[in-house]
Each structure stands twice: as C-alpha cells, then as structure tokens.
Image 1 (tube, rainbow over the protein chains, first blue to last red):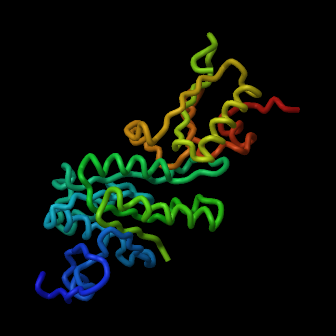
Image 2 (image 1 turned 90 degrees about the vertical axis):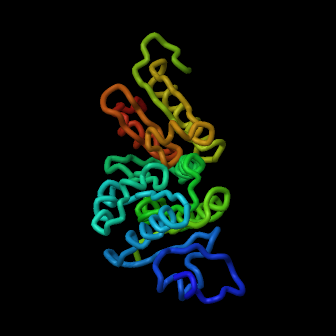
Image 3 (image 1 turned 135 degrees about the vertical axis):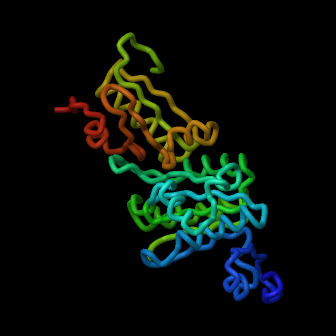
Length: 176
Length: 99
C-alpha cells in the first residue's frame, strides 16, 4: 500500500487514511497539521470516512483520535461502525475517545455564544490521550444555532487556528 | 453575592470562556437580573472553562457562556450572553417584576 503513493514534492505533509485508493491519489492521505472539510449529502458516507480515518490512525499509525459527535449519539455511531468489524469498543481504552456534544433539544438561547468551551474541553482531552487526529461530525448542527453568517464564519475559523496546538489532522464534516 | 442570604432559592452555575466579550456580558447580565428580579435569593458560581475544563466536560458544556440553573425546579440550561432578559426569566420560570 505504502509503495503506491505518488511522490510528494511540494505542499503539506500527509497523514494516511487507510483507504488505499485515496491515499494513492492524494499522495499520502489528508494534509498534516490542517483541517479537512468533508462535505456531502445525507448518507454519502461522511461519518464512515471520518471513522475510518480515526480507526486507521489508532490501529496502524499509533495516532490516538477523538470523535466529536454533534448530531447522533456516539453510542449509535459506534454500534453502526461495529458492523464493519472495527472493534471500536476495544479501541476506546485510550486510543479512541468519543465526545457527545449534541445540543439538547430543550436548549434555550439568549444572546451571543461561541464554541470556546468545546475547544477548552477538547484540548484537555487531547492532552490526556495524546490525540493526533480529531473529527467533528455534523458541525453544521451547532453552526445552525449561530445567529448570522459572520458568527458561523468566526467559529469555523476558530478550529484550524486552534488545531496546531494539539493534533496532527482534523476532519470536519458538514451536510451540503 | 456568593452564598450570601439565608434564603438562597436560585442556584446558578455560569460557565464562561476567560474574558471573552459574551462571557463578560453574561456575568454582568446575570448579576443585574438577580439584583432586579431575584434579590437576595441567588447563588452564582462562575467557572472558567479554560481553568477548569474537567468540570465543563463532566457537565457537557461545549458552548460558552452557558448558564445552568439547578434549583428551584428542574435543571435548565441557557446558552448565550443572557442579553434578552424576558427570555431568560421565562426559561427560569420567573415572573417578570417590571410593570
């Protein structure tokens, strides 16, 4: 698998996804130290792609990961993923961490807010397990609570600025 | 205001993100609201998520500022700078005293 990568002469270093074809055509996977935005319609495989990236990192690259679930509870996501034979339960001991961050349905909002709290919590957890990969699943669910385009943009920019302090690579997913 | 009166009815915990503008506003707005509508009955604990991320995690606080009301009645969460007093009072189940 490794030998099929196109030589990377310029540009950022890459981090393997474990999807052979994708790693080959991208010259080694997703950009290291950057955030990758994954956009697609419902059911197109964004969550599975992101889990694959984390599982590959945890099992083959010695790169622990964090999965932040904004839409579905992590227990459901793990149950779905177990059908691929990934043994995610076994990885949860220090290699893979799931964070449930779905907004509660009875949430009341009054005035401006941001995601600084989430980043403080994640930075703490990333340090605890030495996380190198992080996935934000269904980021659009939280962005939808923000009042205007400027606030949404500000929170989207917050992630890559924050990332280099902790992790190697991140995947951010949003529906089209 | 912390734990002052003998008849503390409202127990609040306010999670803030350092001195971010909306966090600073939330503290001021909550104190003003307590002064005006719930005098001598509020206990407010302010927690900075940057200093105490473990507590933010244990209460699943991901958006800041977040106000949590523990009593009286059911636990309620309000996210934001608490700038709309009427919305906050309604969520807390408090009759507005302003005429």
